[in-house]
Length: 401
Image (tube, rainbow, N blue to C red; front, side, top):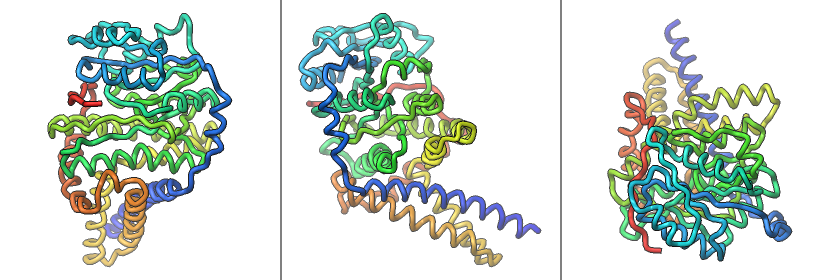
């Protein structure tokens, strides 16, 4: 009886991991499909779209000028750019104004977070709403044509459009930063690109997001959620506006150079991801059945994929347990299932690295992956005993553009 119950529990866990690894495998393999240019040609039909760019900024005096100048250089004007200086205690607002863009200031120390800043900006635009609103973080750089492409895609489809948002590492960065940049690329490029090749929606990843006005005004974004972008994407999907990926549009952020800052940033991202997984997977599955929408079911499965390090840790731990159980009790089915899951996980990671990750993670640094995973273990243990729930701004490094 006890052996039967143990076998049943291990089978359920092993089957769950197999499903998760299978979804990651499918997304990674789909990302290898060739790019088509059909949609790009359609952008030429969209000219003179009325759009505004909102830049939420909290104490961003180190990077705000470079971000604005980069946008002005790409757009050749500044009248479409609005900076929301949110609860700033530094020179963010003054520096932004000196670049010639429009600046609005918000002061409410009791309501802190990017969601509140963006909501303030949207309320400011209500009197003369644009056709499309684009959100750009104050600590990133956009590539040539990025704003136009993501704006046109939002206008064309009537859905939120997400640019490719990647992290750049410094020239003297550690191998750990290289692994982090690769993991970030898997999450923000490989997986959403694979989903888009399959005709499925993607996650919103925080910056380079474009929204038709009627779409973004249909939900309440004022919150202090630590991953407000991910939450917003699922709220919009549930409301009937699943986000669409725009891989040609590139936005780049910067990995923190200080170890403490990098850990704080990762803690916020990954605790927020896990909290969203717990709260939104049931909602998405319930809505998928009620609304008879396959895209919501796919989004739920995609959200079930935890951060890569945690997925590898979970697979290693549970696989080890099933092999011990097999040796002691001759229960081998869970171990066989997990072996298959491990093969799918390995192929998914290697295919993503071969096609997209070599520039971030040179082959000689692949041996750093186990050390990176070990570095992340305390972060996941912290989620169990003292998870981060409050929004905390990441300290910035100066960047030469």
